[in-house]
Length: 242
Ligand SMILES: NC(=O)c1ccc[n+]([C@@H]2O[C@H](COP(=O)([O-])OP(=O)(O)OC[C@H]3O[C@@H](n4cnc5c(N)ncnc54)[C@H](O)[C@@H]3O)[C@@H](O)[C@H]2O)c1
Image: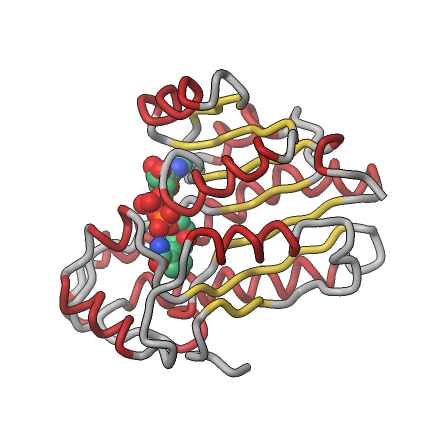
């Protein structure tokens, strides 16, 4: 069974938050890490901080031709989709600007669709792969005030079910993970009322930590996690029991 030191791992949303924490873990595990993000300056900062141990890929995941050019040639064993945005929140569904709803879908759903579209054929051909879409508890439960975010994450969960079942006999697994609140720049940029609403619903009465997230991610994309596909893993301190 292959160790991560022999694997190529592609991580989107790599310059910040969960994506950056995941990048750091796979660098520690000596994987070859392609760190994909829209934010070129923060990617360069990260590359410097990690002494050049990553391959930075400046790419907008909403742009399919750009994703295909940048990612299709990579012989990826693992793809982790962490690029995501909340859009405008703390608004009723009929108050949200449709353009904002569309933008959130373009990043959260289409971004993960584009990257998996680019990398899955190679994984299937090589007979091994692990894809993990970072969804959200919002996609399972629906968070009031977060129409676009919740619906786009529900779409991501649906995609993991479809892709996992389609590829179940190929050696490639596709799963999602649905975290509750983990403090990152994404959460810090949200209205305090919206963050309180989400945090109050967590039975453990605390937010999740980056380590808790990264430990679960590492297991899901490991060769050992070989009999679970099309599934959405829970990381919510008891908020979801299904
Ligand atoms: N932080 C949480 O509490 C939480 C909870 C559940 C799910 N999530 C999900 O986890 C993922 C990461 O969230 P985070 O908290 O780390 O956010 P973050 O804002 O800290 O990081 C997101 C990264 O994605 C990048 N990005 C945004 N649009 C992009 C695009 N079009 N192309 C390429 N890169 C793009 C940003 O530049 C940024 O570096 C998101 O999908 C988010 O929805 C986060």
